[in-house]
Amino acid sequence: MLSNYIKIALRGFTKHKLTFLINTVGLSLGLWAAIQIGLWIKSEFEVGKGLPEIEQAYRVMEHQTYGSEIFTTTSTPGILAEAMKENLAEVEKAATYSWDEVHLFVSGDKRVKLTGFYAGADYLQILQYPFVHGNREKALTDKSHIVLTEDAAIKLFGKTDVIGESVEMVSNDGRELYVVQGVLADLKNNVPNRFEYILPYKVMFDKPYNQWLGFWGNNGPSTILKLQAGTDADKFSASIKDFILKQKQVENEGSNVELFVFPQSELYLHGSWKDGKLQEGRIKTVKLFAMIGFFILIIACINFMNLSTAKSQKRAKEVGVRKVSGADKASLVYQFLSESLLVTLFFRPPGFNFGSGDSSDFQ
Image (tube, rainbow, N blue to C red):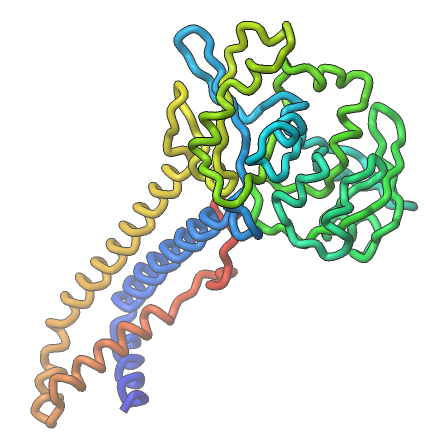
């Protein structure tokens, strides 16, 4: 019976080529666009999530008041993480990390530019990216350590099992030798910012020209915490509000900074503030694309139904003949549904992969 429906549908497509082409292209492109948008939305919601114990990870942020205006930033003092870890019982782990930097790395005859940053020893215990090789607890605990991603390891060494291998970083400070102590799995789209290496924050902190990092009045690096399980984040934010102001240093008299914490997993989509108040942020764009995808799908379906309804008048004779021949209502319904299904499966844009959820499709 199904094969008979397919034969009838194919004959109808051949007889009404223009209608078939419009229906096929219109509905299929509408479905394709809606699916692509849906996959992008799915990938956006996955950014920053899925890591073990990520619900305990919080970014320390600042409200800075200037007159009647309040600016919110992720920049914090370079010594904040260690001070919080030492003085606040709610803090289980704390790490300072820098902005992204591009440096030239040399291994044998390989010379590769990589993007990465400096981070404290607790960083990879707070954001628990999967390790392919190495020990999470030992990585970044010494100034000679470096952690690479799989992709960076392959670029430099042609393989991923490179624990104990040496690599040189060439910068304005000259050549610095590091030993690989960890290799991270491909991060894909689970992080807001892609990186290829991590160096110990102590290396950056100890450079002579970075003495400013040791003062409470600076703002540059970021601070991330892992709070003890069960800690109330709102109460903790209230307790650290004047943490910087309370530091007994003359330089902090009259500080205009108020600290608070925000969930690391929510920062990508919801981390936007205006005058000290939380805004929608990137989630607003995601909602807009969701509406666009929904309306594209609705328009494609309406267009398909309108053309099918207009075409049905020309098929009234066929329906009548089939009824006279003994066809019941169910068989007619199945026939037309099979034709609709064939239309939706007939056309697929070149290069489209229904399994792709890469957020780069719309970036």
